[in-house]
Image 1 (cartoon, rainbow, N blue to C red):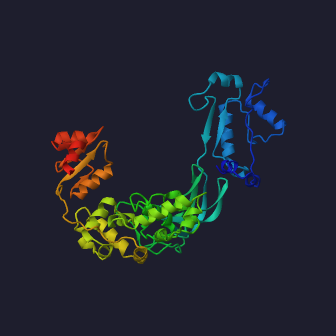
Image 2: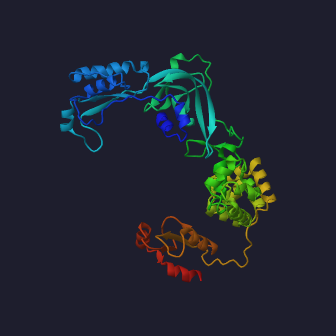
Image 3: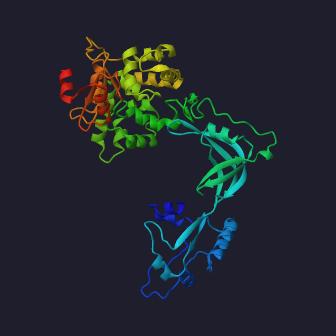
Length: 465
């Protein structure tokens, strides 16, 4: 794969600097073909000066071929290139024509894969890396060792459970191999070599990058950083904040955000509201109009409802629906930030896990600093005042199924919630109405079986007039 990447380089000067080589293994086409065997072709290519596979042998029968495979396996480390197997081929070209090929492979050749090469080295340390989703991954720092054609000095240890299952300690002698002769992995510990000086490893309770809490939730194998301003999560957090599920800033998509981050014009979410027109215009040729439109979209997002802001913050377990519940319940960002876990957990559709997640999020200094900066930028922190609220759907649960002509699912859900109703993803006896569009499926069938009221889009429109 490394060679393939080199050949695809757009800059041929970079390719020229890399020590690429090739072995020719076949004469693909010759006007007057004098050959009767593949081995003859290889000798001919060698005579012409081409590099030909040096480890080749013409065997008279299967037994010598098997012995040759075993011999090649024993000298793999001495070869000047990496190999994960050997191929037995029918030498006679006429017989090859008779045998032919199946859908994917020739019938005249078969590959033998060697077991992954294993070697012993020392686990010098375990360090943690933070991915863009906040996942904290332990990495093994190894005494460098040559394995299957490359030097291995580190590899992933996946998660806390993997370390526990392998009983890994810092300072251990470990056996490593390359999975599929590509990805290095720790196979086992050489326990009889332990001296008693080895150290237990414990996953951190705080993010090694930003110091925010590192949380492992029930049912998950990984710990995650929950810091909204964590540099390791920066790009993903900004993208979510600007997305349709967040502040819905038209024009501020992944590609533009990536460019702004690379140019150090966006170092955190709050920087969105301090961007200058000239900074944005510099990203595109003749970008003045684009920059004007984007600045207008950013300024317009400051007036978004509180629930949009709550959803945009990317609090774990908080989506657009629960963000609306929190905005309606607390009325302002300040009150939500002061909410305690017990009160939150008693709110319908919130619960204990979500309540804990909300409190942990707002307890962080970096969250408080971000909210303060957004306030200073003029971002709305108050819920919409609802005078004479229409609760015509209060106590009702709707299930949407099929394709609607006049509304998206989200738009129909917003209307239902605006009138005090709820939406659900599954039909039960507690369902009040099933709103069925074109090509409605199993939900419609279940509603019919349970005797739940089924309404069309036209009937829904009559209900919301």
